[in-house]
Length: 166
Ligand SMILES: CC(C)(COP(=O)(O)OP(=O)(O)OC[C@H]1O[C@@H](n2cnc3c(N)ncnc32)[C@H](O)[C@@H]1OP(=O)(O)O)[C@@H](O)C(=O)NCCC(=O)NCCS
Image (cartoon, rainbow, N blue to C red; front, top):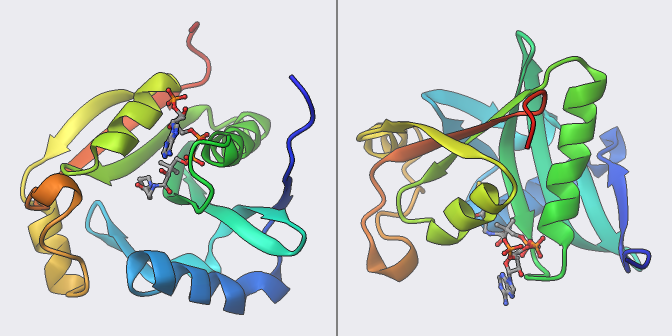
């Protein structure tokens, strides 16, 4: 495989205002409610994919108690390897920090994300029924209807243990 056509780098403090703009464009605000917790995406660690100064994607993550949560992952260049590269960058940090359990939340409508993560070794570990309905009380901007006209109501928790054999 050749070199990727975009660059990856860690989010730096100077990027945080632009992370806010990016987060608002993709998630309607800078906050993300996940598993009942409110995260400020502008304050998290993360990686950017960029080309010629243009942002192509952003992943944010949080490592706590030796578990690494992918809090958000967005690509604006679909199907060109940006999402995979961002996810791999977080997995590399998780390995380095001896936190090989990587987990994330997506929503019941997001069939594309479900495919994307399962193709990369993630498995469903829980369905949190009604969790998005509860999250909407904290973040009213969460849309009610998602991909394919499906009502967004439940959180799907996926995880991958990087120590496991593939
Ligand atoms: C999920 C997401 C991050 C993937 O990013 P991406 O840059 O398209 O990822 P990649 O290019 O590395 O891989 C995309 C997959 O879709 C396929 N694909 C091909 N053409 C595509 C297209 N036009 N649009 C989307 N995916 C396409 C790729 O071949 C690849 O398939 P694979 O899983 O069989 O390998 C991106 O779709 C996204 O930002 N979604 C919206 C936010 C979201 O749902 N985030 C995840 C939940 S928090």
